[in-house]
Image (cartoon, rainbow, N blue to C red):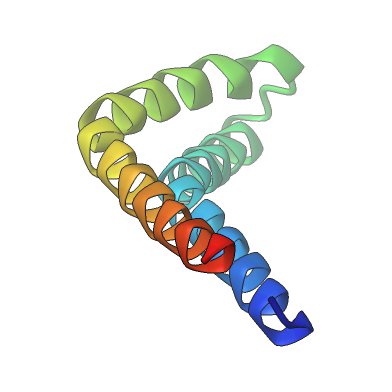
Length: 89
């Protein structure tokens, strides 16, 4: 296995991780932005106010995207096991 193969595996790992985490991160970002705007408009400066809506939003996003995320993780694992079996030969 060459250095380029290892770099390709690392790139695929990072890309798959980003792809799986992206929906939750975007939901957290959007909800946090909306709550921050509402806090600015209403002058409510409660620090814990932004955490509960974020947790709920991320929970719903995880619930709805879990099957897709698991499918992506399984596809990556199958590809890596196939690559590992080629290296052993």
